[in-house]
Length: 446
Image (cartoon, rainbow, N blue to C red; front, top):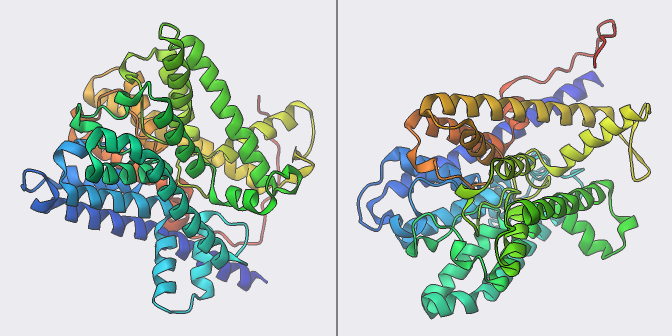
């Protein structure tokens, strides 16, 4: 039995290494392609430090940029960026599995195990069917989003260019990437020119939410429709937590941030900022004028991020839900963490606590470091590190002015946020399979 556990641990560690190395390979390939003269509009070589930053941001579906996507990159460069977004959003293992199936090769158990780790599937059984579902759903939603956006972009940019703009923003929104082509109006302006457009706002928000709630959630919804009782516990927790994290911040933004605007813009901005903070990266309002309390709330939302097995990053909604339920069980003096008539395993609670500690440590330490390096207010730096670690991609406007050491910190955070901090730790260190346990002794806390 011990030998079996050891083999399983080794296989999991190898899966985590393959996932990490897959993203590294994707990033380096994208960075080198973006260095080609054909990738820039001026047909010049873009410095590697800028192409690497862009490739990491696109592959890790973040959206932070140091070169405006619309005005600096050519059509070839934009295609490279969109390809990185698509692969990064779906996962390198998912794309690898697709290529394997198309080539006619048999998918072995080891590859299936990697796929399970990649999309946080509960078990290996049925993983190929789930992957097929993910691919079909992604294509259907992104194409539908592009079709719905086309009338607006066709009117704004012409029939041919409108096709590209529609597809680019649909993929970017569904993958929660936040890259945009609106720099043709004003560099780094994101979607502010459509801040009052109800139609565009609603479509982008639906795409962001659809991509951010996770493929396993959609698998339950497709199977059981609106029968909430039949959903797995994961889906129930995701839907309830996501609903609260979308509604409550929107109410705060409505009353605290946009009270001076007309009612239509006030409602749209409040809803969109609540949605986009969950790792989407677009913004329809100028975030640089946001109050410190609003910026701090957005930072918290960015760190929480989307849902497990989705295109989004962050700590994940299920992590926060488990920690909240664990605290509630302590307050109620209950031995078990319970939710919807089920008991949550202790190792899940421990993992959630480790994730929170890791994210908060990285978030605070790197924010303080950038503030010291750049001599700028700490709140702006924490917003930037929260955006990078949560792969959110929104900024208070300091990204382009950061020095090389600070950009390196941001790149590391984006990579860790997308691949997953625990994935990197599991990939780097051996898993402990020792069966013996040390004597137990209590420590007083609180």
